[in-house]
Amino acid sequence: MNDRQEAEGTVSYLMEAGTLKRAKRSGWWIAGIKDPETIAEHSWRTAVIGAVLAMMEGADPARVALLCTFHDTQETRIGDIPWIGRRYIQTSSNETVTADQVADAHPAVAEGISAIVHDYENGESLEVQVAHDADKLECMIQGLEYLQQGYPAAQEWVDSTRAKLKLPSAIALADAAQTMKLADWQRTYLR
Image (tube, rainbow, N blue to C red):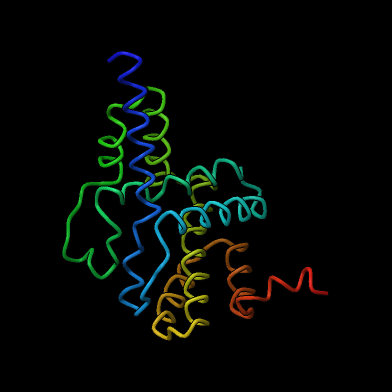
C-alpha cells in the first residue's frame, strides 16, 4: 500500500467515525425516548467522565479518555444493539470489527486503534476499570436527565447502570447525581 492509499484509508475511518454523530442510541427508544442522544454524544461525555474519574482514582486521565473515545466506534458497522436485543443476535467481536474498520488505514493508526479497543475489551488495568465505570456512569446520568424530562421508563436504566458501578469515585458521583436536577450546575455562576 502506498502513502496515498494509507491516507485515504485513514480518512475513510475518520469519515466512518463521523457517522456516529447521526446514529442514535437505540436502547433509549425502548424507554420511550423519542429523540435519544447519538452514539457520538454518549462517547464524548463518557470520555469527559472517564478523565474526571481517572483524576479521582489516580489513573492516567489521557489514557482513560482515549479508551472511552474509541469504546463504541464499532457501532458504525453493527449499530447500537440494546441489551434486550443482544440475547438474539450474535455479532463479531469489537476487535474484529475494529480490524476491518482500520484495515486500509496507516499501519500506525491501525495498530494504535486496534490496541486501544483490545485493551478496553480485555484489559484489567485501573484505566480500563475507570473507562468501564465512566461508560456506566454516563448512561446513568443520561437516564437521570431523561427522567427529569418526563420519561419514567428511564428509571430502569438508571437503576441497572448504577448497580454496575464498582469504583468509589464513580459511586460517589452517582450518589451526587441522583440528588441533583438538570440545571443545578448553573448554581456555580448564579450565586
